[in-house]
Image 1 (cartoon, rainbow, N blue to C red):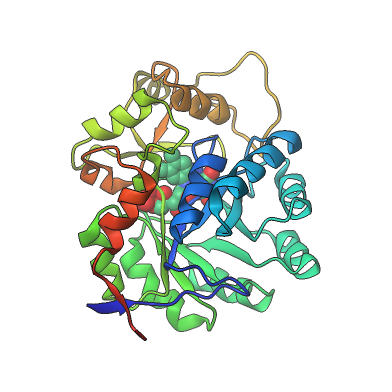
Image 2: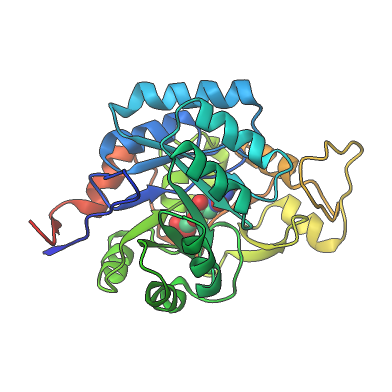
Length: 317
Ligand SMILES: Cc1cc2nc3c(=O)[nH]c(=O)nc-3n(C[C@H](O)[C@H](O)[C@H](O)COP(=O)(O)O)c2cc1C
């Protein structure tokens, strides 16, 4: 089947048209990003919540594994240290800058100055057009199926054609691409590429704890529900004792680190994500995409690439 597009983002030409989405806090670290890059996709380290030293270390770990493959960084615009993280990554020679949960002109300026491609994550054609006019090299259109924070209630399948029609730069689709059938479905829509999170969070190379990954394996269709994040956006998550607690009312923290530009303080999202990543689901929030129920086993990154791409050929091959 000759259906795979060749993805070009600025000067970057990954072998496969796939970005492994950035997953905070510390779910997608250097090991996962480097392994994805080595297999021919673009691997993203989630920089949100990392101090410069840690970020530099993770970028070097990724480079060590990537065998010359493409390694990028994703940071939430909502993070107080957003630009500091991105500037550190540029200084460390990162290949690609991806911004989630918000829109940043400063990042697009940084990309232009440093000659590093910038890819904003958007949920509307209007923002995609703005991103293109400010020099974005591509956009990711993320729909309501995606794991993590959400900027829309609409499906990625509905949003994609609207965005694709509005811009000339490559448009990748994110949200609900978890197995081979999902991939074939979106390739039939003539997408330029895909960004995938959930399937990689459940890989051996993901930095999430076994308890986190086991929670994914227990998920059934319809289990993912929306939490109201203190960032001011909804987010897709699986239920845990902690998600039950925050549904009852605020769970304020004793000490606030001021890690977000704006925070409602109903609970600490950073601590909740770290607890889940570390396996303390009693105190943790497990972000996951709506198609998490399709994850039946924990695979290696190499196995996930085979699952998605074996037997598929490039359109121009
Ligand atoms: C555990 C988890 C954490 C995430 N954290 C971030 C993040 O820090 N920044 C971001 O832009 N997107 C984040 N996302 C979204 C992913 O990068 C990606 O766009 C999304 O997972 C795609 O949808 P899928 O999960 O259905 O594959 C996260 C997703 C998951 C599952």
